[in-house]
Amino acid sequence: MSMLSISHLKKVFTKGKGEEKLLAIKEFSLDVEEGEFICLLGPSGCGKTTLLRIVAGLDFQTEGNILINGNKIAGPGSDRGMVFQEFGLFPWRTSRKNIEFGLELRKVPAKERQAISQKYIDLVGLKGFENAHPYELSGGMKQRVGIARALANDPAVLLMDEPFGALDAQTRNLMQKELLRIWSETRKTVLFVTHSVDEACFLADRIVVMTARPGTIKEIFPIHWARPRDRASVEFAALRKKILAELEREVNISATAITGSGSGD
Image 1: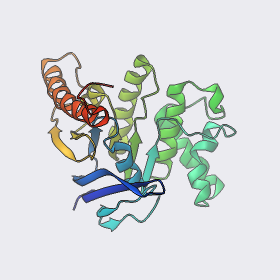
Image 2 (image 1 turned 180 degrees about the horizontal axis):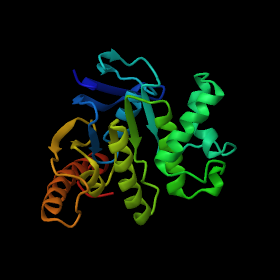
Image 3 (image 1 turned 45 degrees about the vertical axis):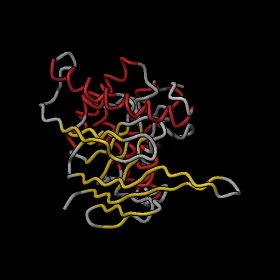
Protein backbone atom coordinates (compact mmCIF):
# COMPACT_ATOMS: atom_id res chain seq x y z
CA MET A 1 0.00 0.00 0.00
CA SER A 2 1.26 3.47 -0.92
CA MET A 3 1.82 6.06 1.81
CA LEU A 4 -0.25 8.61 -0.14
CA SER A 5 -2.80 7.61 -2.76
CA ILE A 6 -4.66 10.17 -4.88
CA SER A 7 -7.27 8.64 -7.18
CA HIS A 8 -9.47 10.23 -9.86
CA LEU A 9 -9.31 13.64 -8.22
CA LYS A 10 -11.51 16.39 -9.64
CA LYS A 11 -11.93 19.95 -8.38
CA VAL A 12 -14.56 22.39 -9.62
CA PHE A 13 -14.77 25.97 -8.31
CA THR A 14 -18.04 27.89 -8.39
CA LYS A 15 -17.69 31.60 -9.17
CA GLY A 16 -20.17 34.39 -8.52
CA LYS A 17 -23.92 34.51 -8.09
CA GLY A 18 -24.49 32.95 -11.47
CA GLU A 19 -22.64 29.89 -10.22
CA GLU A 20 -20.21 29.88 -13.12
CA LYS A 21 -18.12 26.71 -12.81
CA LEU A 22 -14.37 26.47 -13.28
CA LEU A 23 -12.81 23.03 -13.69
CA ALA A 24 -9.41 23.31 -11.98
CA ILE A 25 -8.27 19.66 -11.73
CA LYS A 26 -9.51 16.60 -13.59
CA GLU A 27 -8.72 12.89 -13.34
CA PHE A 28 -5.58 13.31 -11.26
CA SER A 29 -4.28 10.01 -9.89
CA LEU A 30 -0.92 9.46 -8.19
CA ASP A 31 0.53 6.95 -5.72
CA VAL A 32 3.42 8.12 -3.54
CA GLU A 33 5.57 5.65 -1.63
CA GLU A 34 6.81 6.15 1.92
CA GLY A 35 9.94 8.31 2.00
CA GLU A 36 9.56 9.40 -1.62
CA PHE A 37 10.31 12.97 -2.70
CA ILE A 38 7.84 14.13 -5.38
CA CYS A 39 8.00 17.49 -7.17
CA LEU A 40 4.94 18.93 -8.96
CA LEU A 41 5.59 21.15 -11.97
CA GLY A 42 3.14 22.87 -14.28
CA PRO A 43 2.03 26.18 -15.76
CA SER A 44 0.55 28.84 -13.49
CA GLY A 45 -3.08 28.09 -12.74
CA CYS A 46 -2.84 24.34 -13.43
CA GLY A 47 -3.96 23.42 -9.90
CA LYS A 48 -0.68 22.54 -8.16
CA THR A 49 -1.38 24.57 -5.03
CA THR A 50 -5.06 23.57 -5.07
CA LEU A 51 -3.99 19.92 -5.10
CA LEU A 52 -1.63 20.51 -2.18
CA ARG A 53 -4.36 22.29 -0.20
CA ILE A 54 -6.75 19.40 -0.79
CA VAL A 55 -4.16 16.89 0.45
CA ALA A 56 -3.61 19.16 3.48
CA GLY A 57 -7.35 19.16 4.20
CA LEU A 58 -7.57 22.94 3.72
CA ASP A 59 -9.83 22.51 0.67
CA PHE A 60 -11.98 19.66 -0.61
CA GLN A 61 -12.19 17.79 -3.87
CA THR A 62 -15.37 17.64 -5.95
CA GLU A 63 -14.76 13.99 -6.82
CA GLY A 64 -12.16 11.33 -6.07
CA ASN A 65 -10.37 10.02 -3.01
CA ILE A 66 -7.17 10.76 -1.11
CA LEU A 67 -5.80 8.19 1.33
CA ILE A 68 -2.89 8.37 3.74
CA ASN A 69 -1.86 4.93 4.94
CA GLY A 70 -5.27 3.71 3.78
CA ASN A 71 -7.24 6.35 5.70
CA LYS A 72 -9.43 8.94 3.97
CA ILE A 73 -8.60 12.61 4.47
CA ALA A 74 -11.52 14.45 6.04
CA GLY A 75 -9.80 17.71 7.02
CA PRO A 76 -6.53 19.03 8.46
CA GLY A 77 -4.56 16.60 10.61
CA SER A 78 -1.22 16.11 12.32
CA ASP A 79 -0.34 13.39 9.79
CA ARG A 80 0.33 16.20 7.28
CA GLY A 81 2.65 19.15 7.72
CA MET A 82 2.41 22.21 5.45
CA VAL A 83 5.23 24.62 4.59
CA PHE A 84 4.12 27.81 2.83
CA GLN A 85 5.97 30.17 0.51
CA GLU A 86 4.96 33.17 2.65
CA PHE A 87 6.52 31.63 5.81
CA GLY A 88 3.28 32.14 7.78
CA LEU A 89 5.03 32.76 11.09
CA PHE A 90 3.38 34.54 14.00
CA PRO A 91 5.35 37.81 14.39
CA TRP A 92 4.81 37.99 18.15
CA ARG A 93 6.22 34.50 18.73
CA THR A 94 9.86 33.50 18.93
CA SER A 95 11.28 30.78 16.68
CA ARG A 96 10.77 28.21 19.43
CA LYS A 97 7.21 29.32 20.13
CA ASN A 98 6.35 29.24 16.42
CA ILE A 99 7.71 25.70 16.20
CA GLU A 100 5.71 24.66 19.27
CA PHE A 101 2.41 26.14 18.06
CA GLY A 102 0.92 22.88 16.76
CA LEU A 103 2.10 21.04 19.84
CA GLU A 104 0.31 23.58 22.01
CA LEU A 105 -2.92 23.03 20.06
CA ARG A 106 -2.55 19.31 20.75
CA LYS A 107 -1.99 20.10 24.45
CA VAL A 108 1.42 18.45 24.55
CA PRO A 109 2.97 19.11 28.01
CA ALA A 110 5.43 22.02 28.18
CA LYS A 111 8.48 19.89 28.99
CA GLU A 112 7.79 17.56 26.07
CA ARG A 113 7.12 20.53 23.76
CA GLN A 114 10.50 22.00 24.60
CA ALA A 115 12.29 18.72 23.97
CA ILE A 116 10.58 18.31 20.59
CA SER A 117 11.20 21.90 19.52
CA GLN A 118 14.85 21.64 20.53
CA LYS A 119 15.22 18.49 18.44
CA TYR A 120 14.04 20.30 15.32
CA ILE A 121 15.85 23.53 16.14
CA ASP A 122 19.05 21.48 16.07
CA LEU A 123 17.98 19.55 12.95
CA VAL A 124 17.26 22.60 10.78
CA GLY A 125 20.22 24.66 11.99
CA LEU A 126 18.44 27.23 14.18
CA LYS A 127 20.65 26.87 17.24
CA GLY A 128 21.30 30.36 18.60
CA PHE A 129 18.09 31.73 17.06
CA GLU A 130 15.59 29.99 19.37
CA ASN A 131 14.47 33.24 20.96
CA ALA A 132 14.58 35.43 17.86
CA HIS A 133 11.37 36.90 16.45
CA PRO A 134 10.59 36.66 12.72
CA TYR A 135 11.61 40.28 12.05
CA GLU A 136 15.10 39.40 13.31
CA LEU A 137 15.51 36.51 10.86
CA SER A 138 16.54 36.32 7.20
CA GLY A 139 14.24 34.72 4.65
CA GLY A 140 16.18 31.47 4.77
CA MET A 141 16.04 31.37 8.57
CA LYS A 142 12.30 32.05 8.55
CA GLN A 143 11.79 29.11 6.24
CA ARG A 144 13.88 26.93 8.55
CA VAL A 145 11.40 27.83 11.30
CA GLY A 146 8.52 26.93 8.97
CA ILE A 147 10.07 23.54 8.16
CA ALA A 148 10.78 22.83 11.84
CA ARG A 149 7.20 23.78 12.76
CA ALA A 150 5.82 21.36 10.16
CA LEU A 151 8.15 18.55 11.30
CA ALA A 152 7.45 19.05 15.01
CA ASN A 153 4.10 17.25 14.71
CA ASP A 154 5.90 14.25 13.15
CA PRO A 155 3.70 14.20 10.01
CA ALA A 156 3.58 11.22 7.66
CA VAL A 157 3.63 13.59 4.68
CA LEU A 158 5.37 16.95 4.32
CA LEU A 159 3.59 19.31 1.91
CA MET A 160 5.68 22.19 0.55
CA ASP A 161 4.17 24.97 -1.59
CA GLU A 162 7.05 26.76 -3.34
CA PRO A 163 8.83 27.14 0.00
CA PHE A 164 11.91 28.77 -1.52
CA GLY A 165 10.17 30.88 -4.17
CA ALA A 166 10.63 34.15 -2.28
CA LEU A 167 14.35 33.64 -1.64
CA ASP A 168 17.28 34.98 -3.64
CA ALA A 169 19.09 32.48 -5.89
CA GLN A 170 22.04 31.91 -3.56
CA THR A 171 19.87 31.34 -0.48
CA ARG A 172 17.51 29.17 -2.50
CA ASN A 173 20.33 26.83 -3.57
CA LEU A 174 21.55 26.64 0.03
CA MET A 175 18.05 25.82 1.32
CA GLN A 176 17.61 23.10 -1.31
CA LYS A 177 20.76 21.41 -0.02
CA GLU A 178 19.59 21.87 3.58
CA LEU A 179 16.19 20.38 2.76
CA LEU A 180 17.83 17.29 1.25
CA ARG A 181 19.95 16.94 4.38
CA ILE A 182 16.86 17.18 6.59
CA TRP A 183 14.94 14.77 4.35
CA SER A 184 17.80 12.24 4.41
CA GLU A 185 17.69 12.29 8.22
CA THR A 186 13.90 12.17 8.64
CA ARG A 187 12.93 10.21 5.49
CA LYS A 188 9.60 11.98 5.36
CA THR A 189 7.34 11.58 2.34
CA VAL A 190 7.45 14.94 0.52
CA LEU A 191 5.07 16.52 -1.98
CA PHE A 192 6.80 19.68 -3.22
CA VAL A 193 5.29 22.31 -5.55
CA THR A 194 7.70 24.41 -7.60
CA HIS A 195 7.88 26.46 -10.80
CA SER A 196 11.61 25.77 -11.13
CA VAL A 197 12.66 22.87 -13.36
CA ASP A 198 16.21 23.14 -12.00
CA GLU A 199 14.93 22.84 -8.43
CA ALA A 200 12.79 19.82 -9.28
CA CYS A 201 15.68 18.04 -11.03
CA PHE A 202 17.93 18.70 -8.05
CA LEU A 203 15.47 17.51 -5.39
CA ALA A 204 13.04 14.91 -6.66
CA ASP A 205 12.83 11.15 -6.92
CA ARG A 206 10.04 11.73 -9.44
CA ILE A 207 8.91 14.88 -11.23
CA VAL A 208 5.20 15.08 -12.03
CA VAL A 209 4.51 17.49 -14.89
CA MET A 210 0.93 18.74 -15.01
CA THR A 211 -1.06 19.99 -17.97
CA ALA A 212 -2.54 23.45 -18.35
CA ARG A 213 -5.88 23.91 -16.58
CA PRO A 214 -7.75 21.71 -15.99
CA GLY A 215 -4.70 20.13 -14.42
CA THR A 216 -3.96 16.45 -14.77
CA ILE A 217 -0.76 14.46 -15.13
CA LYS A 218 0.96 14.97 -18.48
CA GLU A 219 4.12 12.97 -17.77
CA ILE A 220 6.13 11.59 -14.86
CA PHE A 221 9.93 11.71 -14.95
CA PRO A 222 11.68 9.32 -12.52
CA ILE A 223 15.22 10.27 -11.48
CA HIS A 224 17.53 7.51 -10.30
CA TRP A 225 20.76 9.47 -9.91
CA ALA A 226 22.49 9.59 -6.57
CA ARG A 227 22.46 12.76 -4.52
CA PRO A 228 23.98 15.33 -4.37
CA ARG A 229 23.37 16.03 -8.06
CA ASP A 230 25.61 18.00 -10.35
CA ARG A 231 23.60 20.77 -12.02
CA ALA A 232 26.36 21.14 -14.63
CA SER A 233 26.31 17.48 -15.71
CA VAL A 234 25.20 16.39 -19.19
CA GLU A 235 22.40 14.18 -17.84
CA PHE A 236 21.05 16.99 -15.62
CA ALA A 237 21.00 19.42 -18.57
CA ALA A 238 19.33 16.85 -20.84
CA LEU A 239 16.53 16.15 -18.36
CA ARG A 240 16.00 19.84 -17.69
CA LYS A 241 15.75 20.50 -21.45
CA LYS A 242 13.22 17.70 -21.93
CA ILE A 243 10.99 18.90 -19.08
CA LEU A 244 11.23 22.53 -20.19
CA ALA A 245 9.99 21.50 -23.65
CA GLU A 246 6.97 19.74 -22.11
CA LEU A 247 6.23 22.73 -19.90
CA GLU A 248 6.54 25.19 -22.78
CA ARG A 249 3.83 23.33 -24.68
CA GLU A 250 1.51 23.52 -21.68
CA VAL A 251 2.31 27.18 -21.00
CA ASN A 252 1.42 27.98 -24.63
CA ILE A 253 -1.88 26.12 -24.24
CA SER A 254 -2.59 28.07 -21.06
CA ALA A 255 -1.74 31.39 -22.75
CA THR A 256 -3.99 30.54 -25.69
CA ALA A 257 -6.87 29.76 -23.36
CA ILE A 258 -6.44 33.10 -21.57
CA THR A 259 -5.92 35.38 -24.58
CA GLY A 260 -7.73 33.43 -27.27
CA SER A 261 -4.94 34.32 -29.67
CA GLY A 262 -2.06 31.98 -28.85
CA SER A 263 0.15 34.88 -27.74
CA GLY A 264 1.96 35.07 -24.41
CA ASP A 265 0.96 37.06 -21.33
